[in-house]
Length: 589
Image 1 (spheres, rainbow, N blue to C red):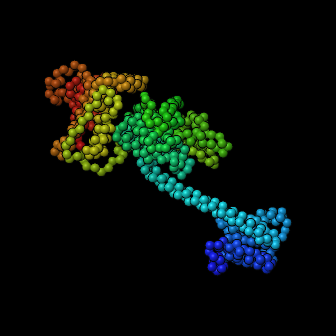
Image 2: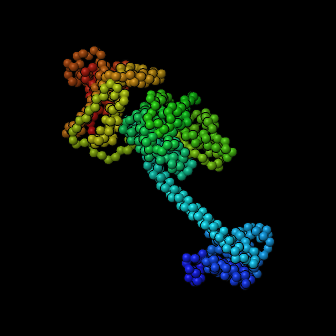
Image 3: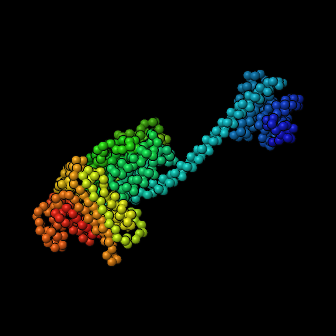
């Protein structure tokens, strides 16, 4: 390209390089003089091939092109120049002696931007140049904006890929491996707005959560990290399912902008595979499929997480008594709302029909195959998630052993810790997670924490349920009685005004062995009920054996008796004091 100095122009008035292509010498010279007066450096060409060569070499910013050339058709030269211009806007003005209508039509079809009739009038030339330059300015602004958008999109894709990596490495990869659980998460964009979480609960239970953030993509998943961290941390510490979901709700309400929230369904399966807690806030119905073909629908009973600052009063998970062959099916609304190429949604009817035909674990394959075949090549508009979870023995394989890390065998220094809850505080505060948090702070290794959790949870539950609330555990011997037991428990808790439960830990070293004395006392009347009034008068060994015999044989404490047997298998000794309302368990580290 010619420089302003070589063209004899002041840089302040230099407009760029103009290419003039005409086989008539007079026309070339006259037009060149006029263009130099407008501030252009001018390159001249007498035929089409010379024009193309000059354009490739000098990359001029504007071209004045004669229609009739001796070697190539002017329109062909224009098309070549436009192709060589690439993304640049290089206006081509045709020089023609044809009528305006003919010239304009041919000019546009060849890719030209305007035309000038010969001989070229100076005033017309100036006006056309000013108009073209305004168009060039708009085009360059548009091109700059397009480039800026492309850069922004590139950065967004890069950031989403990084976020996806963090999401996969931290949120999804931290899930425990539970082979019987089948899950399918299909993203509608780079970043999946649906998430699936799974973790072991202390004592050997399993907890899972399927969530669907508003919309999809990065904006829809900004709450995934706090949700996963809260779910796993609180579950591992022994908090109840309602406490975990309530804390996630509070965090998301504080963190998420208005209009973004998390629809979520969650399950907590007890280690004996006999009961489960189900939670649904804003998700499609969770379905419990049974071997006899019946289905139980767990509908949403609360707004999505993050919508309200606190849960509505009285909100509780749904307690379910499990039977052999039970299978839970959870999905996001992206599954039932997925459309085929004709815009027809997959729908709830097709979803339920596949479940009806499956009668078992092949529900996962049937639903996945049916949905994929139904949607075909239609664009996916929302994230799709499907989870099928059987309540079988393999579900608990490895439960209670996740996250084990190298740690000291036991703490070396003695310590004591105690907590006493009275009256209404017993329904507001769950002391077991607090106790486990302090035990962890004192350096108790994870393997021992899991066993101690079982001991403390069982003893505290017995103290609260049978001691303070006076519940009859014999009620739990039937499925209907089981549900009645927990309904009565909730009612008594809501009405509770008096009574107490005290928890105390006393850790000491006995030689090379660490001994943790766990003591739990309640305000109840105990279980001896005057049958062994001499207990306090007899020796320590008789005291322990007699009260343990009552704890293990009392028909009204049948469920509690099984718990006592489990505790005794984990501890060096278990002693009941008084009428059985104070228990001391020695655990060895």
